[in-house]
Amino acid sequence: MEDKKTILILSAILIGTIVLITAFAFLASSPAKPVNVEIGNAYYTGLQNAKVTVVEFSDFQCPVCEDFNQTVFPRLLSAYKDKVKFVYKFFPLYEIHNLANISAQSAYCAGKQGKFWEYANLLMDNSAQWEADQSQLVNYAKQTGLDLEKFKACQNSDEAKNAVMKDRSQGEGLGVNATPTFFVNGEKIVGLQSLDYWKKLLDSKLKQ
Image 1 (cartoon, rainbow, N blue to C red):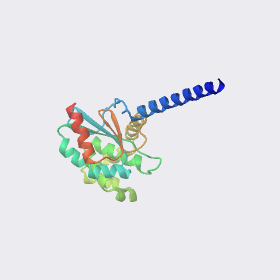
Image 2 (cartoon, one colour):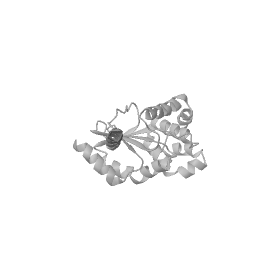
Image 3 (tube, one colour):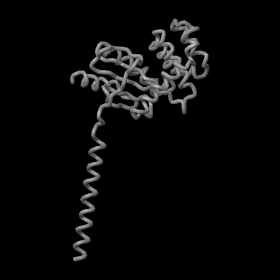
Image 4 (spheres, rainbow, N blue to C red):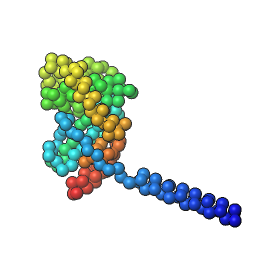
């Protein structure tokens, strides 16, 4: 009898363990529910009232972000600029990147003069240059035709610092802990994905 009881108990434990493992596996494989990502006054390009919105949390010193900006984003923008809204959010990884904050603040200030994307592209395309010589951040402002006095006054202003940190805090609240992290209509995507992946995803979202 004792042996029977032991077998029954062990069987129950085994079955319970299998059920738990199955449940965890199901939850892990289930896509996370979309979240609401507040756009606010973030800089964007593409269609303003688009059916699909891509929000990117990014760091100008992030090599993977640079790769996305150079190899994938231009082609996405060319193909979907009349259909999709692309939003940029600052997520400076200041713990590991010494110029993460000032580069983000500089891009924010360029945006104040209507030149965010032009300035951001210069940062992404010339990271080795400005990382070695921080004065290039002002030179890029000159290249993009900004009012230099206004730009320099803005660079380290409380307004610029607060705007950048507000984005980072928002990202942290959404579970962002690496760059680039994207939210496509609230669906989270982490890291560099291929152009084909993006096209399939955006086409699918546009059809919904």
